[in-house]
Length: 197
Length: 197
Length: 190
Image (cartoon, rainbow over all chains, first blue to last red):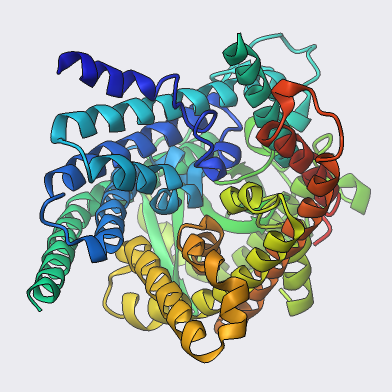
């Protein structure tokens, strides 16, 4: 039992890490990763929703009639998204402002609904929690690393601290819209290279 | 039929619980959210412009209603005299709206400083409007009866390198603020008197 | 802002896919073949205009008067989900020809964040009813334009020899980056 729980958790960190292995949730991945801090914040907000909706859906899986299950999932997920919205406004206001429209859009993040449908509605409480945490943390790590790469190259800073001194001419392409696609594409390519070995 | 009733019951209960939870959370966080807004978005900008004031400008504020919308004004006391007011205006940047705090000295009718509050400009380029103190410093001491312009348009502000549109946006917002100030000056003076120490 | 500026801004400058990054899952998912891309684009135009208008009405006449603005996210997603269901049933019964073309894309649209995103943007920018109508349509056209252009490019990429690790999604993203770069040229125009 303990071993499978660990497996459910760790698969989100490598074997099924979104958005690289599980190509879902691309919008926030591209939209907010202009810096490591934004990426990490977005990832953690998504993790919160993912874990709690997984827990609740797993607990209610025998109560929810299958015909209206998607509607029920959406209500549960949307509730937790609003919880995150309110909490972020109350305690991390600046970050909430930068992430903007992408916080309410967690509702339609395919990762969250996908995990609810494919995992939480069929598995027990502990397994669903582990699954939510794993996928969530994996997603946060991906966003943070993509954010870090774009921030280092694009503005010459890391987590807000200057890295290369004032003489570094930032390659601002990386923090602008087209750079997002290219950076993610190249990171995906690197993941494929490492994975193939 | 039984299934039908179950569907309706589950959906209703779910919606009611979700609504109740959110309503509670919203009341619980409302005060904190307002405080955050003042503290994080407006607070630092106000304190930055009114450096050296002997009062706490974030607390000393009054409201004026213009066309049904209420605008907040913050008062700075220097040498025992409440002679500076700060208020926020919105301008159009490269990516999205820019919030700009503008301070005006009511005795000399001169700009006492500006500071960007909210923006979504490109990090390293347009975002410098907020981060580069030299850019904001150029606005200090400009007269209130002339439009503020970048040097390309025949004004005195040298634009941020690579971010002419952001710079123009900030100038336009400042010009806007000044005409608002000229219009409201009698009413502003009335309120300011109350903060005499 | 005039309507012309609004249209140019929504289609080109702030293109929903390439500048705002909304709706990227169907962007990569349905762009491998021109046919599916055209179908998806049409379905999005159809639903987005309806959703934009209906959510605007719901927000202005229901949420605001009853002080329920904080429930916006949940209200909008339910409206969109119900709308998509309804459109699907309506098309199936009344216009089977259109249903045959759009049917399979409709369920995907509920979770297309471009739809919910545009509805939220319309509210955040405090648009009037007409502006909402125009911007929803223009955003949807922008979505269709980018998707169809991208599908055209991608069909060509299929014929090229791409190094193995770069294949499929990876090269797709880099291509999207180049397309985004062309749209980037419109920035600052409005």
